[in-house]
Image (cartoon, rainbow over all chains, first blue to last red; front, side, top):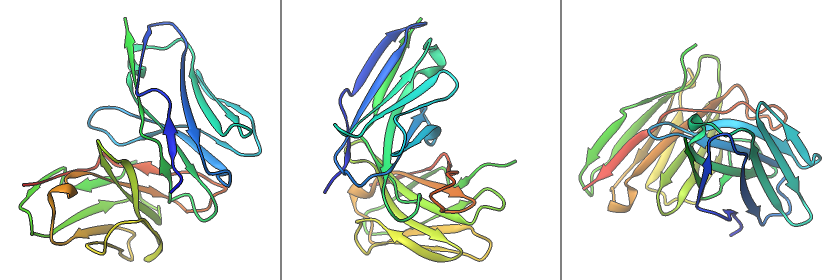
Length: 113
Length: 115
């Protein structure tokens, strides 16, 4: 079946640099996307979301870009900090309710001090 | 306010046994979803409940079942445990499952190990 995938399983960046985490989705009907952060021993934590009628959405130090033409989603983290080290997941949903999310495999972000 | 509470945090069961996991949503939340997280398959949707009714079900065998009570607390049950059921089981709750208003908060999960 269709699923969300991630391009890079691991990403290592220097503290203070910007990070970009990518995600590909295959279901053109998906209309709502979410980025989560998961730290060791914890459940996923909501970071930012975007709907298919938008191309870009900004939060505090984070920006999500959506390119529906190539079915691509990215999360940009500005001035990456050691506390940003975690596994990042993208998730998609279409139709129905928000409780049924399709998650990507995850990208592990490591921030070097 | 208190977050999503999942009990127990850790559980070890023997193959063939059954297990019940509990999820207490954030006060006032009426929607609860369950996910299974494994290193190989990642996060996979199990069920979604809203006001005691199952709204969606993922692609899992019938050994996996769930329910939601009138106070919105939810339980999931796995019967005839298999080694492959070893996973982190996550529960998330929201005020509503309305797609216009996102608000799912995850608990820290129950780590189930089947031996």
